[in-house]
Image (cartoon, rainbow, N blue to C red; front, side, top):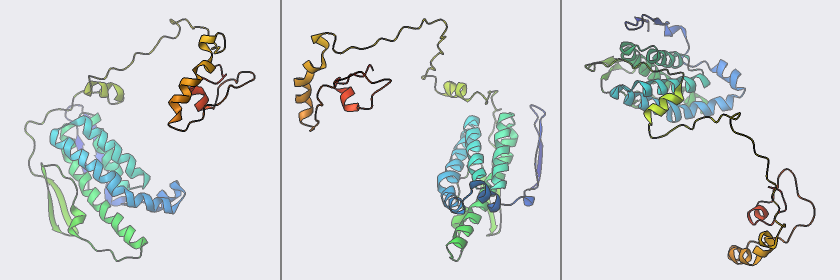
Length: 272
């Protein structure tokens, strides 16, 4: 697949290299990076259900709703997942789709999406082949190999098991432009999408005077003496068979205490 586009809105020229020059999966590089072939095999088995189908479903919804923010996030996630198993073609096309949105190239989004879906189908079949080979089973191609989430504007043109294409058959009209959003500020974008959630303002530490730490003294008076609480605590914990410890003698522990039961019962002499 060779493709080269010019962004009309920004004038940014972006290109896709000849994918035939790149492996579907670079197993040698993946195993070398992970340091464990078994880990690679496990990730390969989980990739289709845990990553690819989830991201393609998200992309399908994003394309149909022309939700560019969602398209960008799903493409970014798929690029990251495919990089772990070195699925080079899917990784490059997912990254290209992400860049299309970030550079506000709406037309390119529609053109690059079917290229990505096609390579995902090819990757899906290769993964199933590798798994069958590892288990010493016979690999059999089925129509299920082509079963992937696909946006309503596209159609899978299947001529044979080895000859197919994903084509744009109905272009959304009108095609809204990608909004000018700073995608490097993801937290701000999330606040725009969820206006009900307000981000806490950072505290200026210099403007707030620091208070001296207050040291608790549970034995300063009878009213605060934890031993006076013993009857009520024993009654409360009796049904749960919790044994209330006796008063701890000795100096206070610093800086903290690991006796959670004692802490909760206020029977610990720890300053905290």
